[in-house]
Image (cartoon, rainbow, N blue to C red; front, side, top):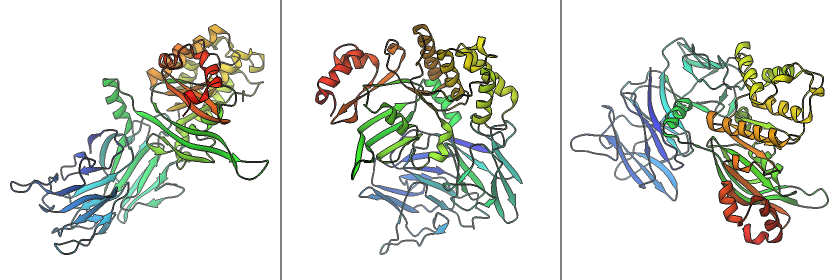
Length: 496
């Protein structure tokens, strides 16, 4: 049985609340520093009112001091559980607050957690951006299967999820979970799940960018697919990347200390856009790309948020959502185009994906990239431009949220370049993918939604501009080609 409530994108502190009727809602806490919590009655109307007969009229209070949130139980009849531990109630003279962190769970329940009260209230405190329509799934069956296949109990339709990804088993002594030999893995409380584990209150399961919180006999989880469908009706896009690189440095091989490669790059990237990364030689284009795709994050001071999460800390889990096409070809020259792409599909797609699913995706991609006539040709016999398109197809075969391409147009003639960027733009818009490409030739810049222009100041790469191509031309007072010379002649004018 599932219930749902929409969670808007917001970075401020909030509560996710499930009442006794199993409906889920959210309460943003940014408007006040004190919030009363309790049962709504004719005489008492708390700030956070819930519908539960076992919640007291003045049950507790949420508060914020110096940016830190806390909760106090105000001497309620049934008390409050905090991450599975029952709190000491407060009174008029003494109060026992608990400080709240992202993911903390509060529950009102007068039974033990193995036999939760159906009238209880569940709350999760959030400070990070977990997008989606939040659902509650009650675990009632001996086996609960999570995966991509439509026969699963909880269906996650994203292509990077395995058909049967993980399994929960219910027995007399509790509920356990094990990974079902998935491709992307199942993570429990931030660690890769390697064996069967019994779940405990507040355990968090993660599969790529999907999250589940175990509480009592239920899983509360964010349904991203349904949220995307909801946004599509309103033509809305969500924030995919928030980049705040204060400094990216490497060790100085010729002396003491470190050498800065990038400084002060702050920008936000929205999903479903085609973005060009521009800049003169040495401005840090490849370094910047390797930071945001997680390939080279050593020496970064600042943060990179991907899908609302810390990319650097969670890269091993989130890497299945990011694709990178290097500047130089990495294929086997003696294989045919079709065989090479089939091998790439088997490596990058979930291993339980059917041959028919793989074949359909491969056929569509070969046609879209204009290499149908070379399907049975050895790659070494293809032209440079054709080899480049094969290299691009090798990573596009897997569905990602973010693709980073290093000079994808290298070796292509003018007409082929236009066809490539037209295809990439269509893919970004129609499939809600975000595609960043490093380019030098700006003849087709009008096909891009945004441009990121990097420049050098004090021999360090910095952000000079981020916006649409039209905005860039107005900013630099001429064509984008002229921006390179202006940045070289007067970097202080355009770089802070």
